[in-house]
Length: 402
Image (cartoon, rainbow, N blue to C red):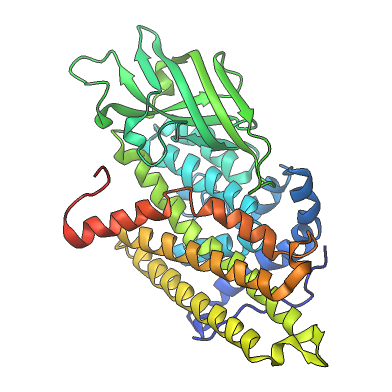
């Protein structure tokens, strides 16, 4: 794959001025690593539908895993720094940023927020270093946008719990050392097992009998990512597998907020990669005796791409400021996730148009990013679900089921 020697993302509103020297240094470290160690190989990995897991050890050095957590060997990054890391990783590929999201924003945050001290001490330091991997199982084959309807159950026994059910679209499940699994608890006095309040989190270790993960094949999007299904068949867990502070559906949704924040930043990297590829191509490609960039229609496309990317950057930067002082709401995170994914997807599509026929070749980035972003538009809340979250905030009326 031809990797641009100079990457020039747009900064029309001088947002770099908001970065400290430490922020810039961290961003440059990740940017250099992506350009040197990842981009030269991603076309091949994408074509072969594989993801080299040894990369986990490399990106762990940037605080990619549990970067927002302080202590337990985690980096303790600011929200802005964490966002910058996600941005640069997704410039490489959505699968790379998804590894960081699944491991850190979902699995590690669940253990940090809802686990016992013993669970935190056992798993978080190794996961921060990338020597242990985790996954997060919430979505089911019949319950994606409505996780409250999940049918996976954890039946209480004298010795612990027995899991039965299925999970779908679970990143890293086939290679995870520990899986954070959400299930409805049955058999507890006074708890309705059909209620969202019955949902609790459990840690399922690799090799546990009855824990059956498998890869999903024939994907047309996010090919360089490990996407899995999980089946549970009388999977016996000890009492200490329960995340003791987990309490209802609000617990996994809180983890999703962390992941959605990272997505709002990550897709800026994919969008910037597509914009930069299209701009450089337009300057170099000669048609009718002059560069494509000299034509009004091409300039219009580039100008609109830069404008929309700048607006998305402003959303992400402001969200980081709010998150830093503990004021970011789930509504604000939904707005940023939905808007920035849609913006990145449109930029990728436009970049492919500017590249013309060569845009479908694996040696270029835009088509791969475009395909990946179709998945990002769906996961961690579909476009429609985020609009309904905002709609409820605006009107006070939930419209999710009518």
